[in-house]
Length: 360
Image 1: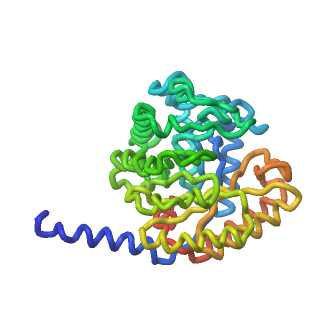
Image 2: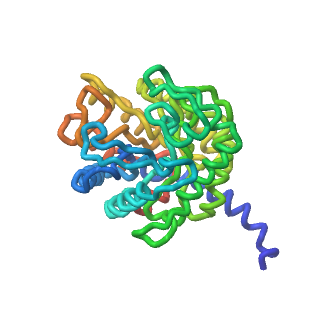
Image 3: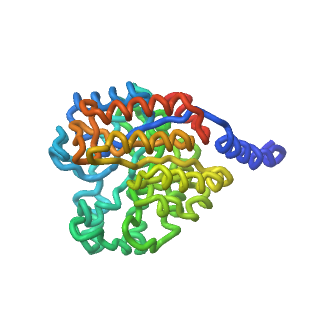
């Protein structure tokens, strides 16, 4: 029987990819709140309830060290997965994220999990990879360090692949299954937040090779693999992303939110995405200053018009008003984010999102 019907599988795969490209589905919005799992439960639930009220569908977080009181919040200190040394795993952070997954799922919100943060490599943070591989550090005060060794050294790559496998194989205390099977609560795993950000692209195939590692564990469980974004639209839209079979989501980041700039890059990228069976997700942008609310309204109007879903950076309690990107419900900007998210949910999008439309 397998031989008789084996010819069907390529045809079925092509049909699935075709549907993802052309079937109109409702658009949606989401938000970043990268350390929400470290907050007091009351604050965590308040953020999730606000997102649900706004009909937001995705929540993006990082697996990274969190300090107590980050950004004036109720966060407790949390170690990275590999704080002591590379390959020595402290699953405390994964257990906290697992609890968040339960709370988010109850509100029809799925997680986007960035499995590492590029800026932990001697920039905003200094993790175990910096010590083991003697990576340069800047503390982000004098630019971003050149972390080429992390991306090109075969031992560092093997260590990082082991980290990815450990995360994927983590046994959920709440669901009783490994995370790589948890498609009800996790929308996507991201290789790294802004890999090779603010440095030369020294290993163009690094993302695809890591995606292959992730896929070898995920199998066909329905969880997506995302690039994790670049530092701007050009680095988010590198050509090799579109030809990598195991990358499904091309994540877009840029804090230049001029509507014409955003629209031109998205419109140029959509044909490549559609022809290669990829989906675009504008997952990081933000605004500050006295016209924060107006800027967000203008760029989200543009994003809604393009049919590409979007995620604001970031929702936090407390918000920061005009002084920074963080937004909370007690500032005028929240009403704009909420209404624009609700509008997005009512509009037809460019891509099909069965993982969203079928419920979290």
